[in-house]
Image (cartoon, rainbow over all chains, first blue to last red; front, side, top):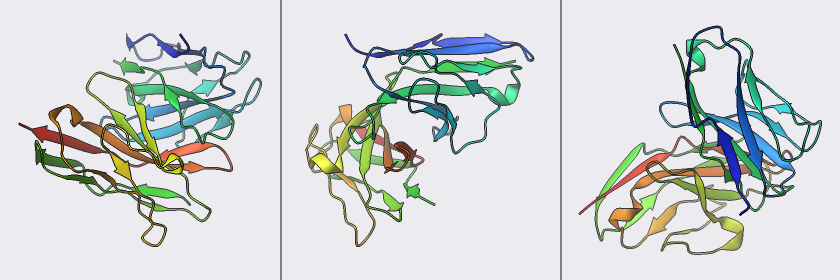
Length: 113
Length: 109
């Protein structure tokens, strides 16, 4: 079944560790996005991609980086995690144009201690 | 810059009462708006799009360009409607969505 998958679902790590949050989709979508959902539940766009080898920064400044080597895969990396990175990270995908709306993954809840 | 405003953080109603979740937007182009819903322990999912003019789970939303609003309405709320609701605006130039801060709807029996 076509879907978008995020792993891990929950992650608790120590300060200074490097982490990668995985996101893969079998929707056949070209566009992919990362949103940060803060404790107040507001969503902020941090990265997006139009397709392979295309990445852009979103509205919210983030110390994370992304890559898009394959259409279906859009991982997010934090080189050195800090407590301020504690949040929920949501991955989404859409067809070109976005007019049909986004499909979201289940999210990764990250806690940095 | 585009902006989406949901003025209510929490809306609490009784089962069977009418519901209106407010959404106002600011956008220089022709707006395309969406409502997303997040039920407890479930992923964020699309509820409806203004361009399709559909009714989903009894909810409707009409785009009012004069008032720059896209309020979500349901005539008779059900307990299973309790969830977090987000209004979102498409930036057509970049295909990115700007979300409002969300409104938590609580429907009591």
